[in-house]
Length: 583
Image 1 (cartoon, helix red, strand yellow):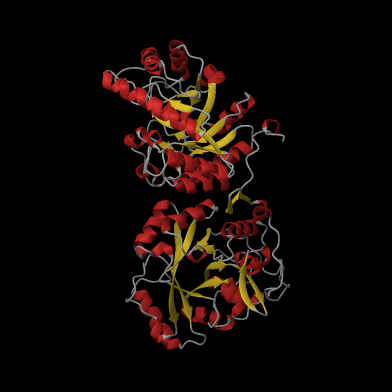
Image 2 (image 1 turned 30 degrees about the vertical axis):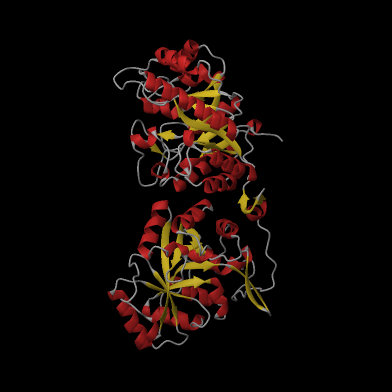
């Protein structure tokens, strides 16, 4: 027999983790991808031909949409049966050859037939992996099959139990052929088998195998209604110190194969047990809110045009609010009363605040005709009415765009804005954004603008990334910040790469951890609102940035924004203890 491990314990490899499509069988491709990314996984395995939602529009179309959303595809699965001549339809089914294919196997397959079937699969460019499953070869037969043919093994932990289990010597013999694993929590009683939440107790064989060598991926096939909790248990267990090849782990006996204790109660897990349902949404677990005095928010359409997905994501990641811009393919200043009321209910049910309202007030070239002035004034009136109905703490305004050939003219812009606001009661505070193409890209121009405007009811929405993008001078932190910090009422968080575009938070020009610490030290208690503007696989166009609404803007933003949300929260939680909330 070849390839048996006899060396001492190796450092355990940490494979990519994710979901099996059977975990969320009704989910469409984008929903499946978003769910696994939100839970902290990186990809999925896909069962073909089971009627799952991801393949509703075809196998290749579903895979393409999953990958565009930001998730990987680890392998696919089919109902083929190695050793059964009637169930090996190579060439008859459309199986993408770029992914390994999980298959079943007869209990005692004919070696000659197996050789022919594997050769046909190789000719078609397919790489079969045999799954451990009820009715398949026992561990001795599986080791013999893999050793003779070199076929890969997909270790389904329930299937391993169903074929009689394995001791450590057998697992060591199988290890060179194990390519990936599927895990699930199962309770076996005299009345049958039912799924339950995953526990560390279920994973000792997997941990042992990972101490022997790497795997392509490990996926959760959860049917107990708690896939995100199961994935958290898996990640936490694999992050624990590895056991050596002869070291007993939870649920195992030194020198012998662990047999699943069918009646063992589910163990408590800190990550899972900390999650509590959101008010009005018992199926949405949430993280505890960040303890910083500053509050975390995300501009919803950076994630999605679906307000339910946005609200659930913010709650699950422990954010305190959502800043409202566009959703349901509707720009903010055109939202209907019904849309606004529905969105407010969604946020209230999840105990999320409306962090702000971001309409395009004064976002355009300075108006010069009566018609343009009337249109600009109407945008103010319509936007502020919607902000008040939504319950927003403020509405965002701009100072009009500059002519690309001229430097900012804050005083000229203030004169126009003063005329447009005359006689208008906004009904709530206004905040002026530091915008790269506007007449107020930096604090210096902001102060000139506000002095000329002569109003004390307008604060500052500080967006330091826009100062970099503006191209009117070098990055002005901290001097630019210090000049106007007393006026800051709201902060937008994103990271620019010079004037080229935006990148993942922390990979660009701005030292956000330092700026967050300074904001906290200076007593800022408002929202830090993530405005990602970074996408997986594409760069936002100038039109996208000027008119940031609709699916063309939000596309490919979910995975990127979740990644940045997690970074932002982590930075805030690393602030010195004296800057954290004490209650």
